[in-house]
Structures are given as structure tokens and as C-alpha cells.
Image 1 (cartoon, rainbow, N blue to C red):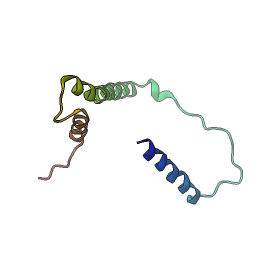
Image 2: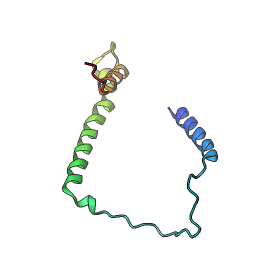
Image 3: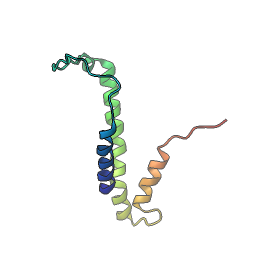
Length: 99
């Protein structure tokens, strides 16, 4: 995984040389950063969405982290811990239903 990450980084870094702007820069570019409106952080909808995403992410992370260790502790060999993680990831994808 590390070698893949390094390889993708190198390919992406090399490809940045060939990227051109579609729109030219304005002659007088201001170096001031635009102000960001942070008022959405105080809304009820944002708080509910953030909490839901946080809890669901934590619920998905924990089983994925501990399934291989649990499989080793109980002596599961077929399927093993890595296979159980693969099965869980495969079942979490959605497939289109054809009528």
C-alpha cells in the first residue's frame, strides 16, 4: 500500500507540469483571503448531519479494525480475518436493482 501511495503521488506530481489554466489570471490579483462565513456551523441541520456521520463512521471503523484480531482469537480459518473484512466491505456496496 505504501508503494502504491508513493507511485500515485509521483505520477500525480509529474502530471501537474502539464496542467494549464483555463482562465488567465486578472492583472491585479488581490492577496487578501476571502472571508468565510462560519454561520452554518451553528445550524441545527449541520449539527444533526455531523453527529450522524460521526457515529456511523465510528460504527463502521471499529468492526473493520478488530475483525482480523477477533478471527485469530477464536481460531477462524475459513474465512479468516482478512477475508471477513473483504466480505464486510463487499456487502457494504450497493448494486443497482434491475427490474
